[in-house]
Image (cartoon, rainbow, N blue to C red; front, side, top):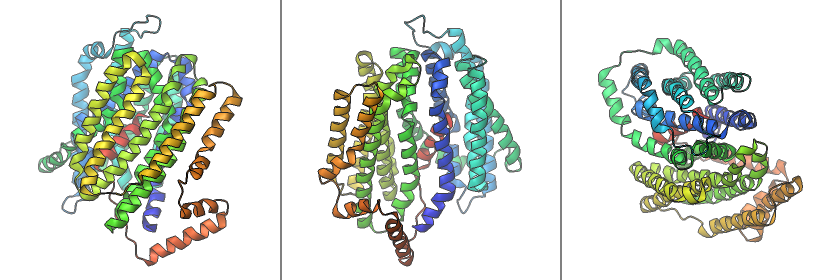
Length: 528
């Protein structure tokens, strides 16, 4: 286990740190952007960012997923794998841009929904320009992800972190200049992201030039496509589950509502960061447990504690949302109504990750696609039904419900293949307590004024104490909680546990999530 911790603290931590910092910047810049962009402008930009990611998944043909697998295969030459995969992505991206650019007008007309409020509506010519900017972004995004993947495999963690941070720190001032003094609105957001992204791509191509080729090794390419193409539907359905609501909101409620909903998604980034860290840390830990019975009980305990922790975070984001959103322009005030639901959806997504790892342990990852497709279908149907009467709150409810569908199906599959004795009573206690506390906060405390914010924070802080009163914690857990006030003793026990693990000869299985899931997370990081 200590080997896993050291690896996590270097390569994994560097990648996660880059993701965390980019998300924090995205949240910190919201007050600035919302004062210079109308809701329709912000909605148009977010819609196109999401669609570019989805289109990139299609034109990649699963080749990045194949790279992750073939690079380390004993009977494959890593240099040829890199050169061949680059050639396919380069030409696929270039051809896609060449084909789509003349169609920018019709694509814009197809995507632009009816706009009922002329004062807030985005000009059709402006939207056409946004599509023309987004299409080359397809080439940039596709190669950015690929080249950073290669960089991770050829350079130490510190170098990867430095490159990604330089990219972020260049993109931010360029985008701010385009949006604020130059007043380019949504065009500034897209140009700032894809313009600086192109500079990074060109720099990485120059750096990797000896390894790259524009001519693929055809037999190798066929083998890689045979592996990668089947992963594309799973990756696309998984990503679509997190963004299809924005497309439906655009058609049902307009781009203004997309902008407001996108702000709610950004405001919930705190929980997304925690989920990402959990995604990185849990698979190696889960696979390192050789004994099946021990694994079952460990998974059950991890789920219980993670659900309890997520309940605390969701209650915090839910109850402080009006104050956070209140810092933004008043046009976006409605986003506060959805932050809690979006945060809950992100927490449920983390449970999906646990169940996906259980499937990985059994080798039956084929069940992932039916579950995500069912969740996607539920999301579409529920949005169609709920958006007209409930507005963007309906989208939040649909997101939570669709993730419940995914988790429910994954639970059904995994319990047949690898039964886990989940601690249902303790899970119920955590969920009931957080629901009651959120209900108290929403019902009895106003959503304005510093004094009432303090009251809501006290309600959130009461969560662990109420859990303690319900008997949620075991005797051993209460003992460890008491050690939090004695850091010296806590450190001593951790070191003892680490030494015991070394003496027992623990081995770590470093398998991670399926390639489609890992790449989907990279897509989300790049979009932020």
